[in-house]
Image 1 (cartoon, helix red, strand yellow):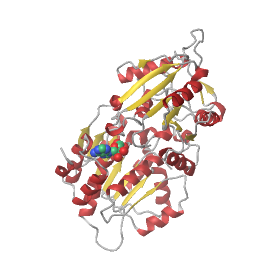
Image 2 (image 1 turned 90 degrees about the vertical axis):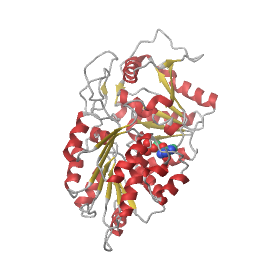
Image 3 (image 1 turned 120 degrees about the vertical axis):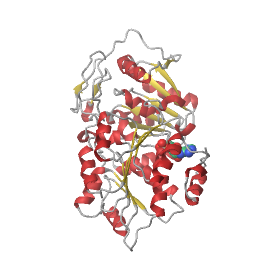
Image 4 (image 1 turned 60 degrees about the horizontal axis):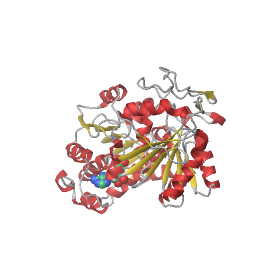
Length: 441
Ligand code: AMP
């Protein structure tokens, strides 16, 4: 299968060829022809599958084929994403693939001043990429007109629901013309997603590429058992020994991410932290420095890492395992993208064994355990409860799925959590917007 057979225009094929893509990914070869027909699509695809090009290319083609009459350029395609980073990423993709087409796009999200967004919108754009909160701000200020939208795209819809955007999404959908094409992309098809899809989609084509939670297949995964207070030493050792130049490190909390990044700097390893308490400018700069190899280590929390697309990221390290097993899959999906092999290492201490069991259950396989010489865990050290939200830091999310044993993160700060044994206590609010600090605004 080649791109030429999908029905895309010469302008788009040229842009794709310049990106160096030799053939479409499965989501692209399945979704593109159907979207070009004008049908609604409900697609199960995770990041890393090439889903963005899967909806961007046919959307650009449809918009360029039918130009609106008159001088005024109304928003004709609207892409909603859960996070600012993902919005920026999608916008970048649209610019790239649409560079030979006379279409205009812009992105709006919170955390930056609204003024420049208003003037860009006023000039007229064909495609608008937005996080729901900031878009509603524009709606309430009357600085955007959504009454001419022909194509609605919900990207990472499951995350938007997890982050509590359902009401915002419904409000926005109510502002759109009834007659339109709807595309919904989601890593998972929960009953909430199905309910949402049923509420606004018309006989959608169902496309599911990678099965749920199989993003990991190209990724070489290893667990290094280690004592809790030797993790940092182990990380510095691994970075130095292998001379890693670009490592993405995951922490459970913002506070932990800040502290680790400072400690790595003290060890002489350049590092930056990225999480929801940082200003948008600081997050963008940290990511740019990391991409340009100015910092070796980017320390991230789960929510901040959503949507990060760093080409061929070779190493992901779980300095702390996530207590929501699905987050593990998202984390390691940052490496081994689009056919490149990657490596995901998890530094696991005795406190985290229950988290590891949950993750292995979700993956339906064991992860190899490799004890590093000189870092053999001390068997006399007993498991301690994992405290989330220490030091005024709020949990980055929680788990409300009944399938895992690890208890949910609680919205309250400084609340002792988890003894590794207790079960069935998973009713915390997952990614409650009030506690993420980045609400997609
Ligand atoms: P996504 O799943 O949309 O986040 O895309 C993941 C990565 O795959 C991005 O870095 C894209 O540039 C890349 N990509 C998208 N389509 C292709 C393709 N057909 N061949 C190779 N890489 C691709």
